[in-house]
Length: 351
Image (tube, rainbow, N blue to C red):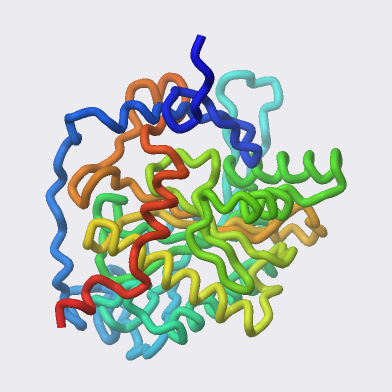
């Protein structure tokens, strides 16, 4: 019987954040077939697009005109997934199979910059700091609404991730309930604190820093790494070094540190296949329910779909849909590839 080799043999890895497993099949990365090619969206975009409903001064779908904004710009989503009005509802507790309840909330859009073609990796650190300040204000303002218990800040980048407009922007959905993934994380963070007295992600981060096998970028305040339990090929997570439960607890230096690591990580993503790298990213932090949440540790997830090139996408199909999540390239290998990318954006060599 051969000895187990985590870099060669199929195995499962445990994700303590959501209490789930992922199947890792590193030997499959040697397959000759490279997967379906996707059409690459051109990186060439104008600085201003008169047809874009997010550009300054343009008319949006609801007829409102955007101001001539110069930094980050926030507005109520014209096609909001959540509505603010209160709805009368009486739950039928005897209904076993057809449970439903109204969900109240607020949906907003955050334009990162007035420039239609300026994504995070190509922004100055100061411009990203402005976005962070905007996120802080929105988390505070939305969290202060009496029925809002969770504020989700996220970005879908690229048409392959379902982004309907190439103008760099993110979204904020604030709602009365904890979303499913957040609730699972909350329960596991709280369970770890109750059992050990420690903070799960702080303890995990210390072990990752000791091993230094999956760390991609580290600065004085944050670490970007490929989680041991990563599902997507080049999935990463940014974790604060200091025990921070929410974005509003950042010091001035931590705002700069977070902006810097966001820029460098997204540069490495773009450099990997020399394309504007698509992903879904989101911040996980303490709920806004008025309670203390020492179990939380500020972190941000990046879930990119690309696998072997700018035209080969990883699909979650078959086994992933019926069984559990699965990946071929190991987290250690993807961390190595990302870490070795230049910190200078590939486009700078074109000029």
